[in-house]
Amino acid sequence: MFWVGLLVRVLYITIARSYHFRAFADHFEFGWEMGRIARALALGRGYADPFVDNTGPTAWNPPLYPLILAGVFKLFGAYTTLSGWVILSINSVFSAATIPAIYEIARRCYGRERNGASVAQWSGWLWALYPAAMQYAVRWVWEMTLTTLLFAWVLVIALRMRGVDGDARNTLKYWLLFGLLWGGVALSNPSPLLFLPVCGLWILFGSKDRVAAFRGAVLAAVVFFSCLTPWAIRNWRVFHAFIPIRGNLGAELYAGNGPGSTGFPWGGTLPIVDGGPRIAEYRSMGEVRFVKMRDEMAKAYIRSHPAHFVKISLKRVYFYWIGVPHPDQAHPAGEYVREINFSFLTFSGLLGAWLSWRRRIPATGLFLWAFLLLPISYYFVTPGARFRHPLEPLIAILSVYLFQAAEKSWRVRWFARS
Image (cartoon, rainbow, N blue to C red):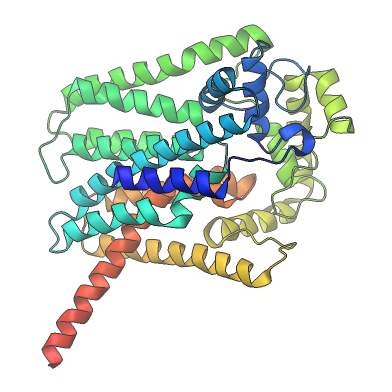
């Protein structure tokens, strides 16, 4: 499945020429802020300039994906078509490497069901071939496929350590790997970290030897914080401020909730446009002061407009699960199809989770916690289909289980009547 999934993705990139990015705004669509940071790294300017040149050091984005992209730019040139093909192919490796994780999650959780092997097979093939599962690998230069890969393997390790459908592997080696994977998640996209305590406690309280498990959890914590420490030290030395992972929350909070906010994604108040007033403020104030100012403005506006904040936050909840509409869509029929497809996966995944809970499928409670916690930050800042991508492997598995169970029920009823 891995090789088929990878081949399909690379063929699409090559045939559809999705590695050709528009040169608009100095190739900004080629990686957006991460692309700018990667170019600065490749040119020897350091981790800097997330929007335009010569704005100085940054902690706007976590470092893992920009460092990978910087390596590509260093070898194949900044914003070249070859670099586009290479980074999208790397994305495709990340996406295809998620397939074995999906297969193992489904096999471990549903292996005792009569259709368990089929659920695992269909879930893997769905991720390998379904266009929506590969869209961010073949078109987007951003961290979604990397974060999804790391998060999926976190779940695999958790299931192994808990002993779901097998012997528990609650050893120091697995705790070390658990901490390392979570460190990778944090340095790729820290939003899933809300789920980390729940995942760790789920393993810990399911262990037969709690003392040994506690020692392992301490080791995992040491490894996790060791992954973050070099980046936090760099930020302290550069900005004289404690920025453990990323430092743009205040600016994003204002962009999503300040004057004129509607709940839709909008970057009009972000320092994106060269020569605009926002970039002038950003350059003159520096990133830390700019973000702090925006954070204070956002909180003041939210306090003075609480009903507006609640309204657009509820709208973002809807967008996260049903899809963000594109009002300027040139083809309304295509827009409806996109929203129906997105919401169909939502409902089938949630119904699959409900059915799994009723049938006491192992780890269903853990998955429900993931559904609850991973979206929270996006409800209050900004929506977008790509932010849900780390949950899509679980949604795929639960959807497949729902329809496999429905097919089995239909067959039983049909044979009973005949």
